[in-house]
Length: 127
Image (cartoon, rainbow, N blue to C red; front, side, top):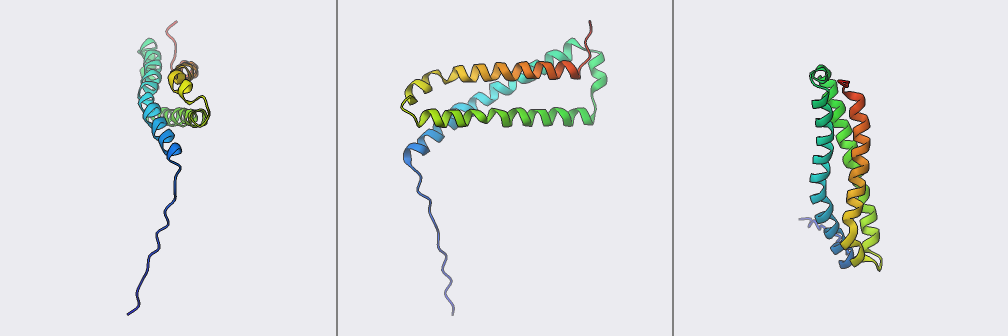
């Protein structure tokens, strides 16, 4: 009988890196919920203020476009992880953890502004 051997390679991860990544995931994924709610509210407000004309825009292609834009917005949200991990690896970790909500607020406001202009172009205005 031929004996089969399986070799398992384990990657050793720096405990500080593991703790920083875990901390970043806990913080930013909780924030993602609010980020998406903010962007949804912006689109919803444009839809409601353009109603009933905005109802005519609804189609499968429109739903696919909204889905694509939502995915792009969430990919852009992931940029926060790079800044977070970099800052946590520095000597400013405690300061960063205390004030990173400011980055969340500014990033969410920036995304809401971009969403405003895109939604304004998608839905007709009742002016």
